[in-house]
Length: 317
Image (cartoon, rainbow, N blue to C red):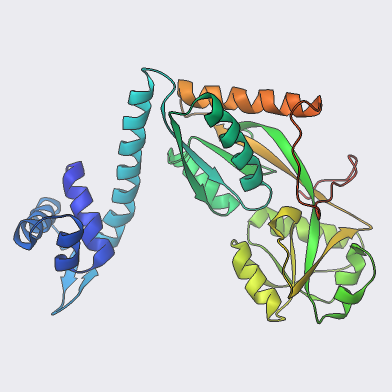
């Protein structure tokens, strides 16, 4: 197998049609078909089930597709790292979770590119478990995640914090409660929508145990937009970090207090992965930016609805 054959295969696997795949690759159909057949011969197994109009991946084809995508990403990343050896240029592969992470990363990228305009970034957004998997596999060089994280496998430092909030359908009685906060006890007995990360589920159960209750979690998910859709339809109340919230006429956001919790965000990287000079420079830039913010030399204005919890607020972990 070579990278060209894998690129051909990935394109066919995504299109599931030789004609469309050939058009996308700007080549004729017969050579592409021959390349796929040669790859099947080399591997000793069919990669596609061939129908009259469409193709379907075999089990072997599905496995190869997943691996081929990873290999091609690593190949491109390696090329970028080699090019960056001649100076601060190239592409930094970053993965982020939802919440405050994208906001933080956006301002770091803006500041870093002001100093190094030749640097590019490739961002990937997903759940905490997915982000850590990409770091472990070398598909991301650094990531912004919500703590806690495995400190034996990953190294990093805290970069921000924010409270946990409830996002409530506007027609729900709790949405009519005065003020911007509600006690955790008001959520007892309510159907809840929460992040799917296993450590988060465990932490939420412990949180409710403190007030002698059990959370009624009806849905666990990794995508905040899915949570919004469910809450809008009255499926339940979302419990998520604050910055995932954006103004929505169908939802009301309230900070959870009286056993309040906050989430800590960290910039992390895999201990066993070698970091390039470019990534090291970016990490140092983030450290310096955080120090400047402490001295109020680099103010950062969050939206009006932003709320920072007291420093002594416990973390949800």
